[in-house]
Length: 229
Length: 367
Image (cartoon, rainbow over all chains, first blue to last red; front, top):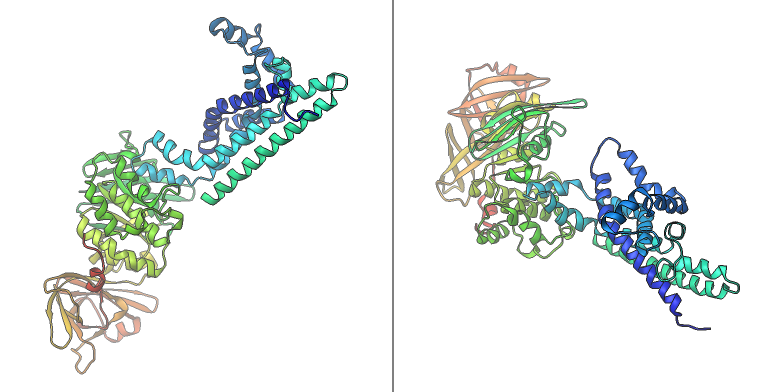
C-alpha cells in the first residue's frame, strides 16, 4: 500500500481546500453584514430574511445545485447575462463549486458571528459613540474585534462543512477531474469503478484526518475566546 | 456654560416630563429614586437616547430640537459621559481605553494633560492592564479619566459610584470634588444618594416618576420642606458654605458662615479655606431659651421659618442669618414648644460633618 498521496488524490485534496477557502472567505463579508443586520437591527420582514438565510440548512443540496444550474447555466437568465456581459461562467468550473459551497455554508457563518455579536454589550458601542467614534470607527475598533472569536468559529465550521459538500457540486458543476472533483466526489468516483474500495477508503481516511484537524482548531479558538473574555 | 433641557417621551407605563435649566458652571445633581428616569435624561443629553419630543441646548448650541428636526449625533456632542457600569472596552488596555476619546477629539488636550489626568486619578500603575483585571473602583476611575481626556465641554456622570461599596465610594468622592474645584467643567451628576449630592452638588434637580419636580441650589433644596415628601424621607440636612476663621488654643477650629460660627475639632486647613459643612436634620435639637451648662459646642440663634409635619415627626426649617437649617424633631416636641413661623429658637447642633477634610485632600497627587 502506497502511503503518499497519488497525483489524483492530492489534486482532489488541494482542489477541496481551494474551493472551500474561496467559498468561505468570499462569503465572509456578506455573512458578517447579515449577522450584523440580524443581531443589531429591527425591520419589517426580519423573520423572512432570517429564514431565507437559513434555507440552505434544510434544503437538499441537490435541490440547491439544481436551482443554481437553472439560474446560472449558460442558457439560464442570470448565467447567460454574466457570460455575455462579463465572460463569467460558473457551470462546470471550480468557481461554481465555490459558489455552491458558499451558499450552503453561509448559515454556519452567519450563526456563529451573530451569536458573538449578540454577546457584545450594546452599551460599549454607545460609549464609543459618546467618545466621538462614528459608525465605521465603532465597527472596526469595537464590534469587529469583540466579534472575532465568533468570526473565527464561523470560518472554521463553514470550512469544515464545505469540505464535505457533494450534492450541490455534482449537480451544478458536474464531476470534472482537476476542476470540480473534490474529495467527496473523488470518493464517489472511486466507488463507481470495480475494485475501487481501497481507493475510497484511502480518501475517506484523508477526510477523517482533515475533519480532526478542523475540530481541534475550532476547539483551540473557542478556548482562546473564553480565556480572553 | 448653560444647559437647557426639555423632554417629553412616553414609555409603556411611564411618562417622561422634564424641564430644567442650568445657568452657571458647577455641579448639578439629578437626584431621585431608582426608576425616576434620571438615566434616560442623561442619555438624551448625551444623544444615545432620542426622545419623541424635546429641546436640549448646551452652551448656546442646540443639540436637539424635535420641532425643528435638529438631532446632533452623540459623537458630535462632546459630552464626557461616565456610565454607571464603566463600559470599558474589554479588548483594550487601560491606556488605550483612556486615550480612545482623546484620539478622536476635534480639539485635543495637550499631551501633558494625559499625564495629569492619570496622576489625578491614580492610574499610573494600571495602564498596561486589561479592564477585566481591575477592581470596581479602578474601573470607575478609568471611565472617568477616559471621559475627561475626550476634551468634553461638559461631564455627564450617571451614578458613577452606585456599583461601588462604601469604602470604594469614599475613595473616589475626593477625586470628584477635586474635579469640581479644579477642572472647572460643568457636571451633571446623577445620583440617588443624598449624601453624595450634598457633598458634591451646587444645584440640584429632583426627579420623581419621570418628572422634574424641584430645582434649586443645593443649600435651598436640601433645607426645603418639599424634599422629604418627594424623595421618600431621605436623610435630610443642611449644607452650609463656611470659611475657616480661627484655630483656637482649646483645640477647636472656628468655621464662620453667614448666620453664625460653628466649632469643630481642629482642622489642618489654613485660615480662609472655604469648606462645605453638613448638619443632618436629626443632629439638631431646639430650645426656646439659650441653654447653659451643656456639653454641645454649637448653639446657634435662629428663627423658625416654616414647619412641615408628617406622621409623628416634624421638619422645622430654620433661618439663621442668610443660611437655612433644617431640624427633624417629633411632632409632640414641636407642639410642646408651640413652634410657629417667626418664633425665635436656639439650635443645638450635636455634630457637624466637614466634607473632604484636609488630611484626605493632601493624600491626593497634586494637579
